[in-house]
Length: 394
Length: 193
Image (cartoon, rainbow over all chains, first blue to last red; front, side, top):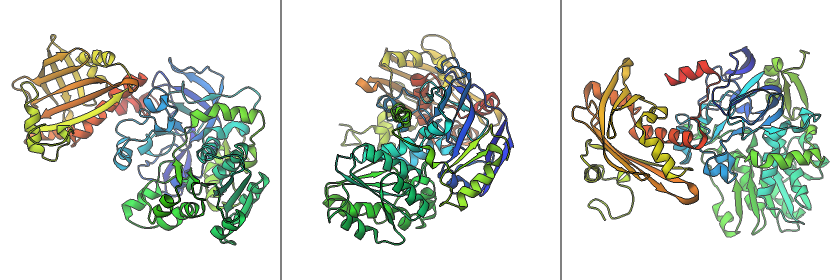
């Protein structure tokens, strides 16, 4: 089959590789119809992520048609499914509590060691995101092997466009979980740092959960325009003093809930932050946590801070005093995708949530290297690229 | 209260390594081995099911990475064949010294073992979380060629090997599979060797 493979910094290629097969009884093989490039894929592209190997197939946002099933899969050939980016067994203690991104069993024992050493416990397996999260082949390919296919993939009704449901795989549930973790009450003002895909979905979700106002903070004009379309008020941090503006816009109270979705492009586990730690450099330090620090300072007393942004290592100058003295609550974590998928599919079917606005480019799988370069170089214009393995070359 | 510690923590986690190992050896019947490893894992299954699978030693090669095979000779005696460098193997006979159904299995290596070792595996009910499985292993890290074998057997770090083997046991019992990244059978074969 053809697949987008990683070979090093700024070197991704479409190669011919061995097809996937059913290896374990709960597996299924999916023929990919749509697969997105995630902001976090750019960290792989930039060579920041340790434990990558030449030839690794990337991609963790994908959907397609079931073409083969193992003896214990519950899927049927011909079904269309969206697959969560986290691999979850469904039978461990965390999975039984719907804390799917804490799955104990999906990361092979030897690969799980790194996360275990860094975080105290091993992290779950992810598709196409380095060997410390399992080394599983990703979905930017014609076909993919999906382990535990009886737990993860959600079946999509006939006649619903790929573009409407593809983002159930990652960024839509991630934005939704971010808003849920902000524990929004009717009448609340919610501030969202970062208007990438997760921030934009968090804005939509916050309004659905009863927020009266959402204030969106970014510096890309196009992304702020999108936020405005969904009813958010905007702050461009290159033109405006964010803390002062937030205090004045909320009558001196501060937002009731703050969402940090700035680091979201570092989706997988951590990445540059780990490198940071290894190098004992400071390049994570100031910029990365800048949004989180600002969120904690601006948040009203007794308010909530939700962090879908990915952090992986250590941070400097965390304002613990402000956090404690103001009595804030913080909630964070990788997304429990499987938990949110059914309700969000319904919301899409009932047209309560729009996802297609995000897609700026569609291209054949063969053009994926071009797509990576565009996404990397033009963050304002390129909001989301979807690769279509079945699409004829341009 | 024990001789070496004033708290309630497992002996294998003591900073007084030598004294703790000596004391643990006093608890294992016919103890062999001067180094101590302890690990625990919680498995979302009843103790009886886990004990039954583990007690049939011919099953252990399915999740113990370096075990080539285990021949069960009678109710208490089994013959272990374990991978060593350069395609070689090391072997020993293990004898069950204590067997409490659904609760505990203890063993010791027979005289003449390439790798003297002993230990026990305990199964403790943990309510809604299933069963805590705790392994306590004493072994001798010998010098020379056998030392290299040990290094390979435990991937240089006995705690790591015990941790990984227990994690694979958990995967197998909870999901019916040992997780693999392999995309197809060719990669799976490579991974197994």
